[in-house]
Length: 141
Image 1 (tube, rainbow, N blue to C red):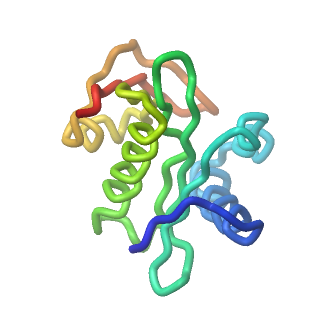
Image 2 (cartoon, rainbow, N blue to C red):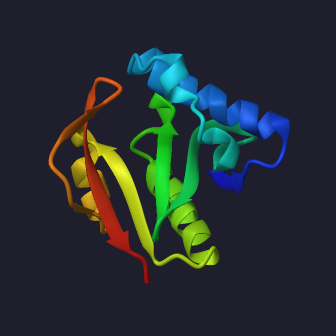
């Protein structure tokens, strides 16, 4: 998979398409919650396999943190380290922008995945878009 920052309208459309499939269609997140007011300020990433979009995410900066958001991989591409690849690229962007701390709100079923990547839970469980989440952070090297 090749991960790149969304640079064209097609890239952005591809990212939104993957997010819609995963979050809206699969997880039943309302579309107006999924595509939000933070999208215009975010750095969007898209993962392509043979020029087909298969993964997406976005990075924002808030306080002392680079915030990893909307990380998603198409169902038929899961279990192939696609999510780890997206996160690695997101962490690189955070460091390139002068930040040393990363934060994300993880769906609780994905806690172990993020822990394997060095993230630690720092919050109690909370609901977001009807899905249980926790906040996790990582100090980037």
